[in-house]
Length: 246
Ligand code: V4E
Image 1 (cartoon, helix red, strand yellow):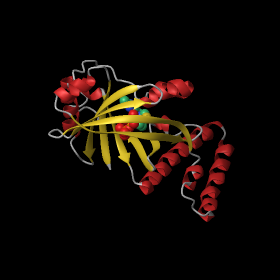
Image 2 (spheres, rainbow, N blue to C red):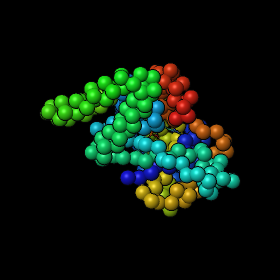
Image 3 (cartoon, rainbow, N blue to C red):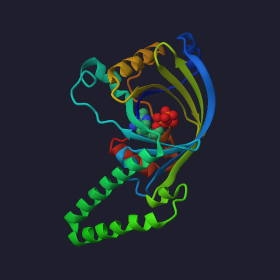
């Protein structure tokens, strides 16, 4: 499992020229279609958990626990660090399903706690109902993606991206320029940190690259999902923003 640390930036007419000037090497262009999944109540994304299928492969991004008072969150490092997102990336399907089960268990426990406070008998009957569900499912022949419907997961967003990728060999830094099919152009500076790796080093590499690219703004830049939801599901975007997920 890796942690993906990234900073998004807005592309302009000079971005390609600037990348070339600072020694970025174009390592190719590709196109991919992403499908994002959640329950109809958005139990995953409201917890900042993002399940997607890209080029036939499943990927799960979960938030990293923020460290409390460290160099990362105090002093001048904090501004640069606040512009970066950090997500654990799981790409192995059995691990993804295990993690999803954990998240759904938390969701149900939260739901039961709320119900218990309001109406104790309803909470108990919900718990009993759920206990029978896995037993039934285990009897079914496991179709390739039957786990999706078993977990009540449906596709809530899909779009195609054309991506140009750049590498800085000496730094281990990666830059992607994305053009989404709904008309949004965004760049990202990314460093992958292996489990237990040094987050500070990754943040510093990203900050140095941002400076070389001439990125001066201290505002977080919207990701593709943000812009997609604005158009296709503004109510869910409002909820995610109010819960500080996006
Ligand atoms: C984590 C996340 C989402 C999943 C997709 O993340 P993103 O990095 O935006 O997509 P993409 O296509 O660049 O993935 P990659 O190819 O790099 O793996 S959708 C929304 N989020 C949350 C999120 C956030 N809180 N802040 C920012 C800046 N981006 C995404």
